[in-house]
Picture 1 (cartoon, rainbow, N blue to C red):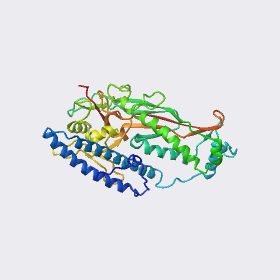
Picture 2 (picture 1 turned 60 degrees about the vertical axis):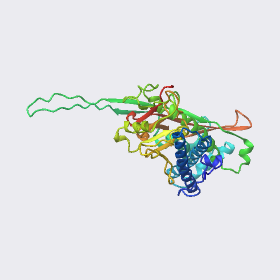
Picture 3 (picture 1 turned 90 degrees about the vertical axis):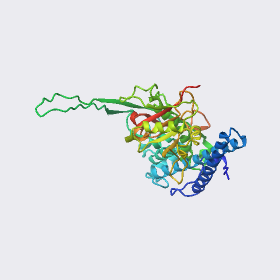
Picture 4 (picture 1 turned 30 degrees about the horizontal axis):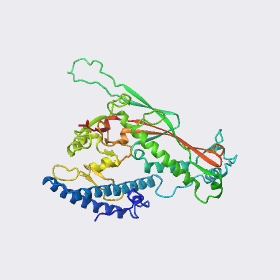
Length: 414
């Protein structure tokens, strides 16, 4: 029996405690039930195809179950992200490490008052810097909703940019006899790459009366507003950003891409070009996996969007086993050919010459640069009676190692 959850539940609104309990186990059970039914319906459909008969009822049922599985798996994935963020933040409520400063920050939110003794929070332009725990809360929320932050290397810096040296190797050697001369061999060279930051911002507003009368946690309110804006902007930029006042997305470093020549070690290789523009076969998935060198496969994973993941759910190996498998427990993602899958909305759909799927070790392959600190400027003048909280953070990103990543290129249209 297919479990049809409400859209909110299906999209991942699952209450999860730090121990991974609550109704997450119920969602996983429903996912397993639907997955069993999905396989049975696919078997029926295969028999219909073999008999050259297309029952629209079976087709409709298959599409509905497939969509419901995607919803349930999405709920599990979001719950897993919540668990990961809880662990990042110590597994519980955030600790207020500087209560005096935090209280002054809240007072500034309401009235704009700044205690002169708390000069560490003031800024020359009349603004106020967010306290450490508030900054950390926004970062933790971004981990939940920005998949690349959970996968990539994140480097905090205190200057505008970050330059990294790369060993281009090239050490020479040779075999010689006992008394043969030993001429000089070649010496390794170094390359470098600079990662610059762009500025990401949010500018939520509230009336002064709301601020005066509010009984709600104002910090939590504005953190949610910031999280929504930042997560959307970052999610797009880390995948396909052009590098102009924003991160350079990893897809721009693919062979033929805008940044294909930017890294000293070259571009990200196309592991597989599919025969069709609209999908991928099981054999092409296997070819992609084995195109990545074995030394980089231990922590490799697939990234793709929701639509692409739905399209590969019916793929089987030569023994009739499904390559895609759902989550079986809290903290465990869905897998494809035994490798984890991360759903990344910013990845493109299957279309001619698009790059809908990537595979590899993203921790070693991509680096996110955070300019330390979130700045909040309180602006009660520009748009009276609204008070704006202009919140900024400087973020960058770029390719770290092209050798550990591969992409799928969709074939040309027929």
